[in-house]
Length: 74
Image (cartoon, rainbow, N blue to C red):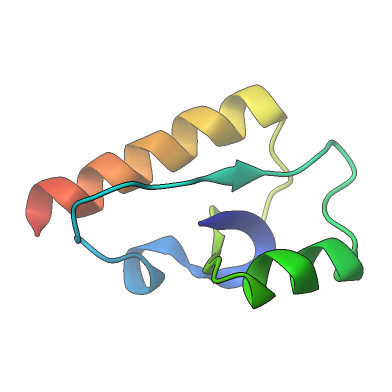
């Protein structure tokens, strides 16, 4: 998953599938268009953790919560 403000809402975009999971959180200024294209071109699903820009530490916690929530309910 690519945590990005421009992504789809996490609750509708994430899958409860088990297995290896790679989560990517961007730099303070966000991802560039080229970085987004490389990541999504490689199979990353772009998800939004909300409209607010989060600090990387907070985004990591939110993304792990989202993964756990989706995988627990699936």
